[in-house]
Amino acid sequence: DGTAARVRSMATRWPGLQVVPAEGQGKKAAITTGVGRARHAWVLVTDADVRCGRERLDVFARHLGATEDVLVGGPVRMTHRSGLPGTLQAEETAALQGATLGSGIGGRPVLLNGANMAFRKEVFERMGGYAGDRWASGDDVFLLERIVRHGGRAGVLPDQKAAVEVEPEYEWSGWWRQRLRWAGKMRGSRSVLGLVGGLAVLLLPWILLLVTARFLGSAHVGMGLLRSGALLVAAWLLWVVPVLRLVGAVKRTWHVPHRPLACLIALLAFAIYAPLIAILSIFVRTTWKGRRV
Image (cartoon, rainbow, N blue to C red; front, side, top):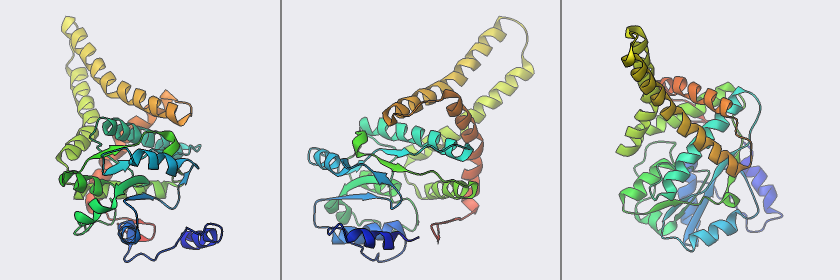
């Protein structure tokens, strides 16, 4: 995609920048090659299509020098673009970042984003890196699971000065392939907590919808109707309100306006397309960046 040529052109003004041919295909092979060439205790990884501020490395360095974690995830922001695909992705990214940072600050991150993470070289090599991992995608989630399984500590760096910024997919075709890729890699997950949590996220709105439909189909006027209706409304609010508040909190750290209506539309859309994509990912293998995942 021209990344290597662009990096080589930048290297003329940045002597420390190197282009190293990966020993294999995909990001996992590139990371493994880079770890083998690394000379320091920590390896900081990102994606070729992100942007970051000047302070990112300094902020990471200060944090890594003081933490006992062996895997650290940093913030990932999404550049907002007009249009439905961009809105859906911006709201989705904010919700995922809220879950990542919230669980990570609590000491048990459920997710990390490979666009911005660091790990100890010695730990990566001692546990065998990605050896035996047959999935093309999932350099972040599977590394998190493997490190936790080997007794390592994982955490997050919430400082927005360490953030990277990503662009959304502009076309529906790219949006679709990206989500099929994300859903497909979850087939290789060994995290019981992650799988149970994922199923809960997918099924909860449909369970609420089924219960609501049965209630409306058999409702009778009386105090029982009011009580049951109030419980149903409360259940829907318990699903919607925490997500809206979480996304709003993340948007404030991004210094961008929070639009609750757009967030609600994105949440309802996610409730519809996420189960469909999860089922299709079992049977459909898509391509991403020129390779099958």
